[in-house]
Length: 263
Length: 367
Image (cartoon, rainbow over all chains, first blue to last red; front, side, top):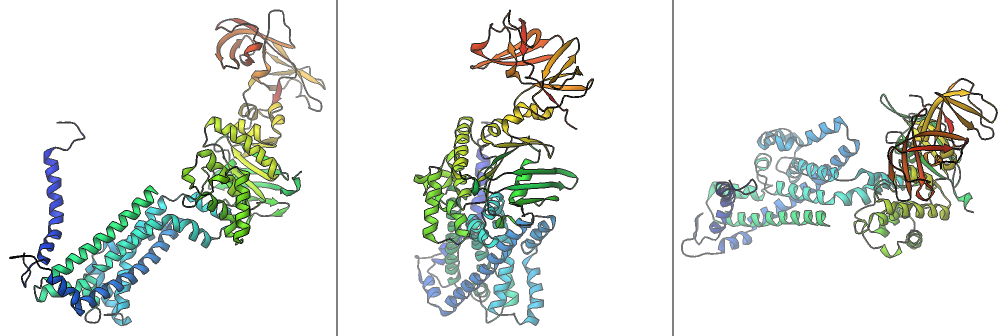
């Protein structure tokens, strides 16, 4: 043994294999998207960007991208507002009951989304929310709350409660304290939560399959249908665009965190 | 000169219970206009709870808090208009020094021009005018403390509350800031209520000290009064150091008595107006170590005890001696090095002496 700190060759290769195993399925779509063939395959004679052209030139694909984006924005606003208020409320009251509330808020993460989707389908019907922008935005917004509650609660755990006392001691009302002292301190947590809530809505499929049909046709739904109906490499191109977009969001999140830790 | 600016605070029968635990028990206290009062006590004595009740963060279980005779007990903290310096300062880390100091003015909706002038004045008051654009974490502990002071004073608060304001600083800086704080108090002429467990800080800063133990007020008074005439053993022991002599009262007169301890008698002279304990009663005397002298061979004193040096410590400015006496047990003496008639050594026989008015009768504290 060469000491407790060093990883042996076995451990090291295991780690690399695991990492590759996780990343390969994501990476495989890149060459597929660049294929010169008319079906889902690896490039044969050369690489081609025409499938990206197909996606970006198609009203259907662009419509779905736009729809997914607006739904994700609306859902994010809902998740962030409700999740932040819930986390701050639980933090301020901080009793046993609030622990229960916090656990309840995590339920959408714990319950399989297909079960959740069946429930939504049952009671969205009578409310006329099936296959409506509002219905999908509400469903995504509510299921995005846990991400925000988690990130904001974490930010609040590091918040010095004496700052709130200090603000109120100097005459600040509750809303002034919230605006000028608490929110600026937990803003990185709120942004992280918003990014996760956005990604959650952006690539959500199961609920959309249940509560939407024709009017609301989100991007994941279009990919799903495309794979079921024809094996157009345009799907891989969309997937690449999705991956790039998600990577961008995650990098934004990281940069924000680094700034709030270092700054 | 600034006396009229300060406000008077009174606590009437203040109590705070947390379930079965009594944090503060029936404390009544008056703080005069412009006075610097320190609440002094060991941890768990209830001093911080009292301060937090005055600030409005803790609701008392019983009793009332009055400002200039007006009951403010039900008011929330934001309606009390008190400045407060928190332990660890609680500066807003995302705001610059100037923004921190502006905060109380901003919440009051003051105009920008008026705000800027006041903030400049407050920062100049604590000599931090050049640091207005720094963030709190770019300042030293002492500077942060002064920002906290400026922020607490900028809105002309009725009272300034200080929660262990110097406890986070090292010893040398603490002494410096003690002087600054005292000068600041004199300049602004406001009523200050300070909380500390540091008896030196309390003695040097305060106009008056209130000593607390187990949630009760043990004694309140001017620093000199508390030091020279402690009412109980706890006060004598907590405020400075003390020897305790235990014995029976003998031959009590209007001006003094003798304490009979074993085969010796200790003469005690009382100040005018102080009543002697009843004849034959068991009594405790407090004798400050610095009032005990090491006698030269032919030197006399009103009280003399012979013994041997158990141990001694050289403190630079002086010596601290532990002497085992035959009848009075162990006695500590602290004497300036230049005044020691002999060089101390362990086992050396010595004679200790003290004046009849050096020892003070104190009460045993109720458990």
